[in-house]
Image 1 (spheres, rainbow, N blue to C red):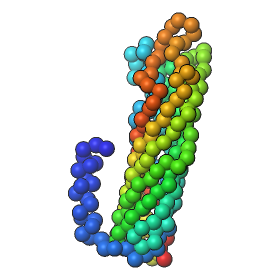
Image 2 (tube, rainbow, N blue to C red):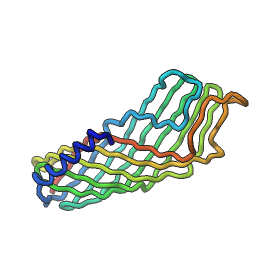
Image 3 (tube, rainbow, N blue to C red):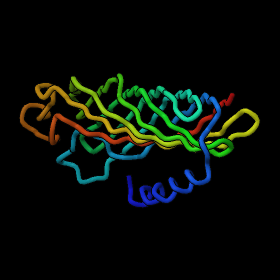
Image 4 (tube, rainbow, N blue to C red):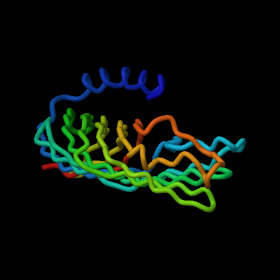
Length: 211
């Protein structure tokens, strides 16, 4: 998280706690990601390229929360499709992450919800193409956690929601399945480790119902 975002949260938290009281409502909230940070999540590096690679990250998914007054549980599933195309290589990864969340909320007409999640399932599939060969490294471990916050505005039994979520993912590939050469002798790409740390972030929008 950038220093600007972190500073904004430090300022925002006391304001919200002072302006919002304890919630007495039962809430059902649904959110979906609408924007994914355009970071380079690629595992491999093209060692022979001097050009700027094309990076495309797309995401789909949803979050569902049930809050009983000021505490609740949630479930989030996010599928992030990552693509990096360079001069010699094209890498594509599909990352499916399912989180079990714990959430806390304050406020009535204007509300603030925050919480954390633990990765409870998912998968990571990666393919690497060099123009003539294709490789499919095998993922044998996926773990991690997440943090999130959601701002809400309540009116006439409905809520409009704006959220931000950051996921910290740890993945490990079978090192014997990771390619080190293209063809027989021409090495064109490299990787630092078969253990990978990813940080993905999504802006979320949603609606809620109160009782």
